[in-house]
Amino acid sequence: MEAEIRLGTYQREFIDFLVESEVLSFGDFVTKSGRRAPYFVNTGNFHNGSRISRLGDFYASHIQKIGLSEVHSLFGPAYKGVPLCVSTSISLYNRFKHDIGFTFNRKEEKTHGDKGNFVGTPLTDGDSILIIEDVITAGLTLREVVTTILDHAQVDIRGVIVSVDRCEKGAGELSAADEIERDLGITVYPLVTIHEVLRYLSEPNSSGFSLSNELFDRTKNYLEQYGA
Image (tube, rainbow, N blue to C red; front, side, top):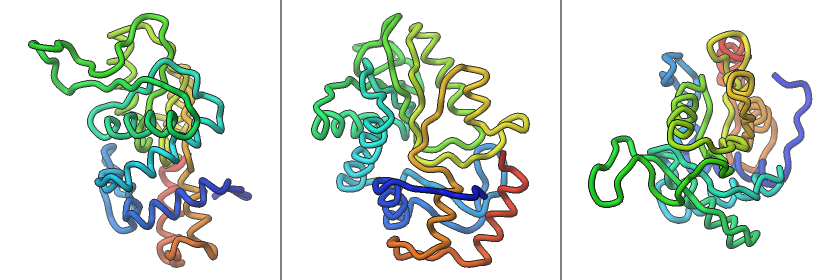
């Protein structure tokens, strides 16, 4: 675990929001990479207007803080990234007056009407984008998305915004996020890391949930095995 963690106000509120919305769960789960994990982040539970609106606000606050609001479009990979990029685009305009486009891909190319793989703000060579994702585990989905985008247009990908970085190994000993930066030259900017979440929930907090010693130890053991 990280020795010292300092969270901003919106990050503490975001962890509270993860717990409140039952997006963060503890138990026994199998991730896309095939690992058996003691916790799961299911952004599919952001399934109504109030939740997806608040989520967009958190993403927008994070983008504003790290200074990446001057881009052509926010790209949301299908399917979970679709509402994420839309709600974040709305919040960036309503709260910070940044009028940024949003773009997302289809799983299957449309051959009639508005043909193609992409919906929303058109992307052309030289445009700048931010990819808006839910979580990063092994980075498999993100690699596929980057390939899909660059096959369509040679855009400047300024970074990837994710809700939670699980801080797990990719193909080697580096974290999936560090491998993405090494291999693709793209930086991942998480709202919070799993280490920050665990430390916050294992101490007195305002989420209404306290991480038991048993759950803390299980998660710590998991990260010792799979964490970078």
